[in-house]
Amino acid sequence: MSCYLTKNMSKTMAQSTPHIDRIVDLNALLAKKSHFLLGPRQTGKTFLIRHKLTEARVYDLLDAEVYLTLSRHPGRISEEIQPDDRIVAIDEIQRLPELLNEVHRLIESRGLRFLLTGSSARKLRRGGINLLGGRARTKYLHPLTYKELDTRFDLFQAIKCGLIPSIYFSDEPRADLHAYAGSYLQQEIMAEGTTRNIPAFSRFLHVAALCNATIVNFTNVANDAQVARTTVYEYFEILKDTLILHELPAWRKSKKRKPLASSKYYFFDIGVVSVLQDREFRAGAPEFGEAFETYLMHELKCFSDYVSGVRLSYWRSTSGFEVDFILGDHTAVEVKAKKNISANDIKPLRMLAEEALLKRYVCVSLEPRRRKIGIVEILPYQEFLDLLWDNAFV
Image 1: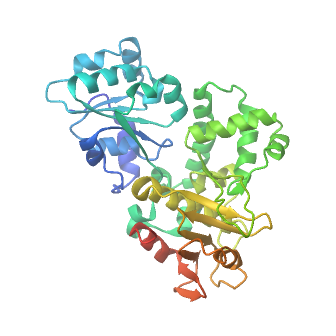
Image 2: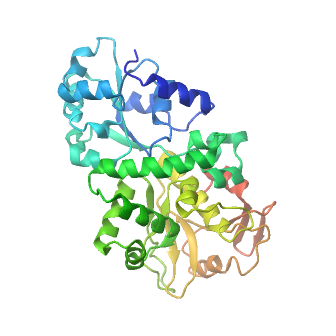
Image 3: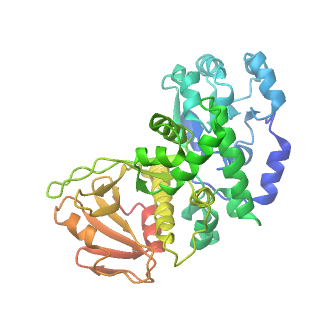
């Protein structure tokens, strides 16, 4: 039986967002083991609970009454669970990490399965996530994907609005994005308790967004944001821990051309990037290429987390050749937001191919039809995404 779900929020989400079947199957996950389901706010964790765990006992820690009751008496969960309860969901567990002691006990003593959702890995670690010691696995939930949206997918809408469900389907996506980036992100950081200097963090957030999809020069970011370099490192860690930022490490196995070792960073949603940068990504504009690359990073990250577990990286030589993504140790992917790919566009792929270390070299583009230049496959983005989600890149 469901209880303590925030009715107004669920009703609002149901009205504004059509039902989309998500790749993450909660029932299949919980049939095996308890799970943490982590993801940025509004990616659909509560929505999934409401629609997929209809028989679960649900505690929503964003509900003030529920939060106060359980903060005073965590053992109340044990008192309320009935003999026929098999699954318990605790939404926004990072708000009350001390509940993990009770969760641990109930998994051991009653064999219950728990779904524990949250948006902050940092708070869970501080609050004792290790107390569960292997008794719960971790799954990540991201904004919507090409595969999930199916016929509702539109590349230019995805790049303009992002893929947070409620915003992708909003009749005022820009207003909702500004609200998300302005109030939510700042509140999330405030909730971390690591900074009270919101003006400094706001300056940093704008500068960090301008560094999206690049190798970050932390000294320059510190100067532009007018904060200490050590503070910039701390802020980047906060963005990673709150799942707002993904780090893409360097692929360092090339021999002929010495690779760089520094990571690149991508925000989790291109719509959020656009409002933090204070500009829209329009087709044909110079910034559209960065946006297209960030969107592809999103699809690759989702595929890795949901399906394959493949390690993602990028390659850049000290001489300046760069390939956007390396999948495992088998596929190189360059992203070009162009309708006509030239030989010069795929030169980094050809330079990397000289090392003969990978199986496939792919350029994802806006071209209408597949073709091949030497060893390099030039694929329309739709075909690439179909192949990706069909697990063709292995």
